[in-house]
Length: 234
Figure 1 (cartoon, rainbow, N blue to C red):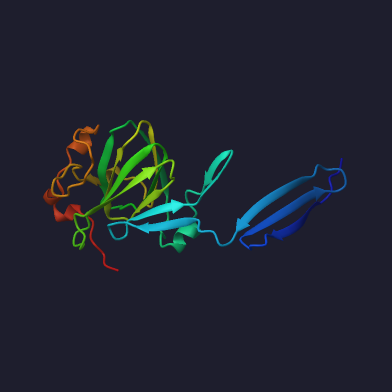
Figure 2: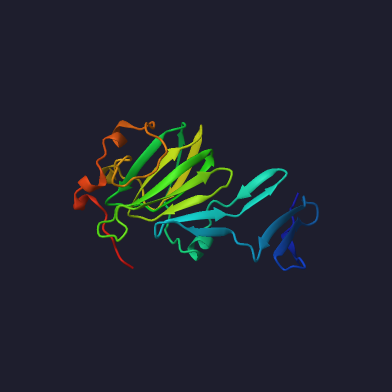
């Protein structure tokens, strides 16, 4: 049977508040092919990502818009154009996903020669996420900021390149996801001791579950300057 040409009829509907635009596309083949409708949705006047400044310049808490109904919820965890609009212009090239038992602490980690900006959130449970400024010459050197990430809230933390990163699993089965602006490079990987008393992160735990590698990291003051990323003023 010969199939007719694919045709499309479009109908644009706008609600009275002018916040939502509905586009109905009606595709059909003539004369006997199956017909189907594609329904798409766009919106105006909705804040898709809320940006919240933290105690550390450059480190941000982000709260994407979560759409909830009787079925559950939906959230855009990343939309390049919208994140560029709020100042996050990094090109993310690698996505990572870890699972951690309660009281697991990972970090502080950073890459020296291939520094990574990170966008982090949790898909299950809660985690205390900490960013540490280790840039040599930074006016905020040795300072830190934290965000409590929650799967229920769907909030995120953005950490610029040049910062060290760590997180503590606060609940069982924490599913931790993050985007990186550079690929993982084992030769470039370095770290800072999680319990460095000069930094003074308030983890709320004395004996976390930690890897042997992380336990061997040195305090920040003991790291040679050449092992620290440089501070670049804007």
